[in-house]
Image 1 (cartoon, rainbow, N blue to C red):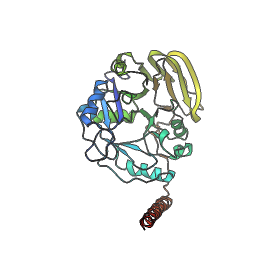
Image 2: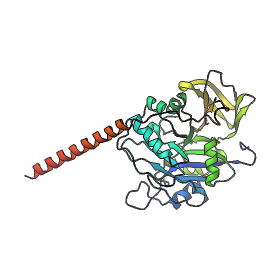
Image 3: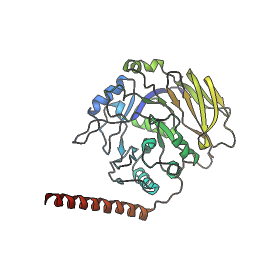
Length: 348
């Protein structure tokens, strides 16, 4: 049963790479091949998020205009949805929160949505940064290291509301150990970009980590065998969720990454959010090692704002950012000078 009458769950991946024109490539396969590989595994929406390059749509299944911004040393990457062009500027070493916030502001000026990519694997990203950064709508989940998503709670607990997408970040669509490890199920009536964008803005989806032990045959048959959310929403003041299969456990996380409650051997959930809790998000764990993540249910005043999203007032320290970049340039120039000096001296 879909979340809304007339709609159905569409399987999607919003972070995968393809071959591009030019010498720098992170994937050996052209867009048509990558989309075909994902389509064979039941994906109906595929975003080709190449680094600093907008890839032409490949049919209806890859109609999402997106690119992955960032080539600095810290892997501070963002998916930019719906841009008119690629913005190439990036900080070489974005260590300061001020630099990171500057990039979010810079990219959001020409984007429908921003996704903060793989924060768990981004160097120098800590709890303090996650609490301060604002101006993005989507957090990328589940880097493969942890299923707990504590960095998401660091941001949510500071009032930085965001939805969560789980993606492959795939660089080899022919490798069965790299493709279809993650999925998102969007409640849609169409897979055109306008419908996908409305769904992303409304948080009408759930994310999923798929079992890493699955073979390609398991993945081909997974749409009929995997656990699904059949219904979810707020009913009579309670958060309600119904699963297609019984979960080993269902955890409810809240402020400060606190475990608010846990249910075992559960397929139906009714939960009332305590009055002193600003949000709750749900994670369901299944016997086959698959994991389902819901978007956060949050308290907000609908008379003051249409959603819990809010961009907090913030200031980018331009001078500190400029001085840091200038220092890096000076260090780089000094190292190049020393290397040149040693090379000349070695030839004498």
